[in-house]
Image (cartoon, rainbow, N blue to C red; front, side):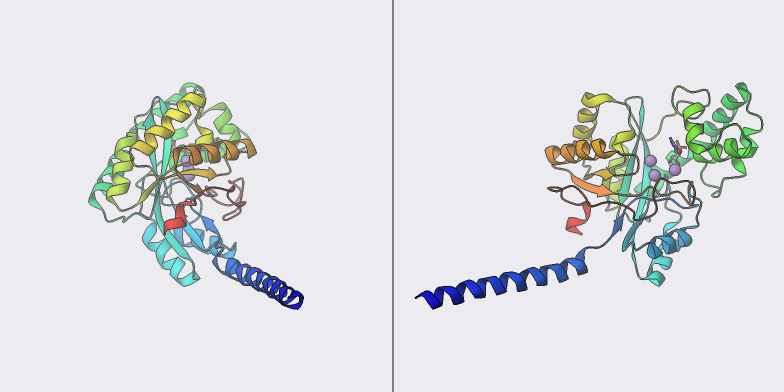
Length: 306
Ligand code: AMP
Ligand code: MN
Ligand code: MN
Ligand code: MN
């Protein structure tokens, strides 16, 4: 009896080790590095879409989503670059939404950019940007910033889209502020002299367009929204009700408390979790492409069903 028990135990131990070893190997193979939020010159990033993809590949990203603001114009070039670099490109966009007086961003992932409904929706969102930018320029002029319109235009890289990031670069260049973070502390954020109200897409429309295009909707960097705990619960509930799929839990906009908070919200509301560097280019971002920790335990990654 005794020897058999010993043998059985030995075998279990060996299997456990072998099993562990096999799992470790499999883990290495399947633990892909995901970065599901970044920008290119198709919106307000500094790198061309192909350069963005190459940088991500160099940094060890296996799956990259290009998520330009309100536009999909960079995806074809990015897709070709991804094939060349041997990484996977997730076709995405970051849709600007107005919700309850707050601007919310919804990251779209795995969209078909040819979808007419999505293309028309994004076109409508973009088309409001020119008039808004004119008003931003006028507001800046009114507080003594000279040449804001022409200055911002010099940084615009897509004729289809102007963003506050372009104004920010001009304000830094012209010496009104030290860096782009400073611009948003002194001029371009809500309540400051260079901020103008604007009506973006509704949350319902944005999610509907994304779903029409076969994609999934991710609530981007919720830690940035100034809506309080109750507002956040209401936003997340409405986001889910309307067909939203995931919350961006890991983002350079989030500190450790935010990560824990939004992980808990995702679990409570049965939403998946996403992660992204929100990379805008060298010298402008808090972190490098793909430079993200692991998602907290107990979350379903947004890619779990891909
Ligand atoms: P817009 O879509 O025109 O409102 O511009 C939003 C963009 O401005 C963001 O995607 C960032 O590129 C930039 N931005 C907004 N807030 C900040 C901030 N606090 N620091 C640096 N850049 C910011
Ligand atoms: Mn941006
Ligand atoms: Mn955003
Ligand atoms: Mn972004």
